Structure formats: C-alpha cells, structure tokens
Image 1 (tube, protein in one colour):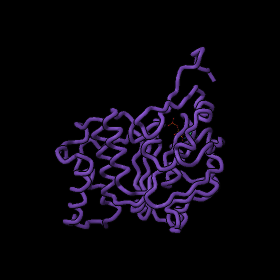
Image 2: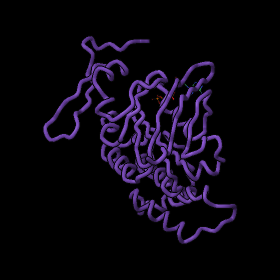
Image 3: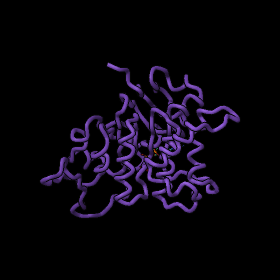
Length: 265
Ligand SMILES: Nc1ncnc2c1ncn2[C@@H]1O[C@H](COP(=O)(O)OP(=O)(O)OP(=O)(O)O)[C@@H](O)[C@H]1O
C-alpha cells in the first residue's frame, strides 16, 4: 500500500495557555479529499495553519510524504503545499494573470525567465477556473467569487501535490459553491478543506473530520460521521436527516429548537 501523503500523529496545540487542539490523528492518501467540519472555534483553521507550518504544534508530528513537515525548507513546502485561506488579502493592483504568475515563484530562482511551459500552466489554470476573459482585469474589479477562483487558480499554477483550503465557498453563491468544489475535486490532488456547510462536505469530500473544542469527534466517510445525534450534540442544534427519492445522500437539516432561544454560553 502506498505511504500516505499527509500524516498527523497525536497533534496538540496550545496558544496563549489555551489548549486549541488535542490528540489529533489522521492520515490522508494521495488524491483523497478530507473535509474538516465543526462549530465556530473548534480549531479547523488552526489545524490548517499547522499543516502548512504557519503554526508549530506544541507536541505531536505532521509528516508530509515521508518526512516531518519541519524537515522541509520553506521553499520545499511552497512547492508541495498550496494554501487558499479565508478572505485572502488581494494585492489589488495586480491583474488576475499577474496573481497567477505568483504561483510560479516557489519553482523559480531569482531572475529566472518565464518559460513557454510556465505560460501553458497559467493558460490551463485560467481555463480550468473559467477566468480566461478576466485575465487582464485587476483584482479589485473582480467579484468575491471571481477573486476566490483566482486564488484557487494561483494554487493550481503552484502545482503542489497538497491543497489546503479554508472555507473556499465563503461568500459564494450556490452555483459557485458547487462550481468551486467540483473544480477542486477534479484536480486529483490530496486535499484538506475546512467547510461550514455539512451538505457540501458530505457531497464532495471522501472523508470527514469532525472537530469540537479541539478534539476529533468523528473521522471517516460522511455517512458514518455526519449522524444526527452526534451533529445535534456538537452543534447544539436539533438535527435530522431527510431522505429524498432520487438523491444519492440524505439532506442534513438543522431545525429550530422547540423553545427557540439561543444559549448565551
Ligand atoms: N493566536 C491565537 N491565540 C490564542 N487563541 C487563538 C489564536 N488563534 C485562534 N485561537 C483560538 O483557537 C480556537 C480555535 O480557533 P480556529 O480559528 O482554529 O477555529 P475554527 O474552527 O476555524 O473557527 P471558525 O469556524 O469560527 O472559523 C478559538 O477559540 C480561537 O479563539
């Protein structure tokens, strides 16, 4: 059996004397997409930051392919791991195409020229993300969805084997939510993707990691992890699964609690 691309071993994270993540374990094989879900503050973004070295674990290990993450240089990491974060801060004066060219940086040395192969990479990324007609537009003139696609296109140009995404569907309308996740899924990369929408996570991710208060409460295929009793407890909201004829999976539906009031805790 091939070794996993990403392995997380008993990962713990403490920040400002608070335990943010506890005993996180999982491994991800090549080409698999792991959806990380959980309530606000569960530790999803912190986990993603650990996975690309923005944060260091208090204890435990992350292995990228067959080496600990810390054994990779910054440059090696940038060649292998592409990150699309929540509300990326755009460099507004750049055009879409110039943003994509930034994806080449980890593979270039200072003053290396842009080759025809590089240009092909950029064309392909523009094509795959539907941005050909927007290539010359500056980033400040793109809609939220177009901007999000531009950052995903830059990740494609980066040509990394691992893609980490923090809420890639944030602020996108329903059409673009599906379009972006379809696109990501088709890339065949090893992907970790934080998502708030459990139905989207169930539809697109191979496996789900359910986090609550920094701990794993479920790990495995969506139909095993996303069970109403567990979800009701974790999200503190009544939940049921609705089976619909013709749909391949049930709809996860959270509904108002009988007495409606939100808890103040
Ligand atoms: N630099 C930091 N210092 C101290 N605490 C932090 C820091 N960064 C995050 N936290 C805390 O860690 C916890 C997890 O935060 P994180 O952003 O990882 O959660 P999340 O699951 O991504 O939440 P959300 O769904 O709201 O984006 C939160 O309680 C947050 O306040």
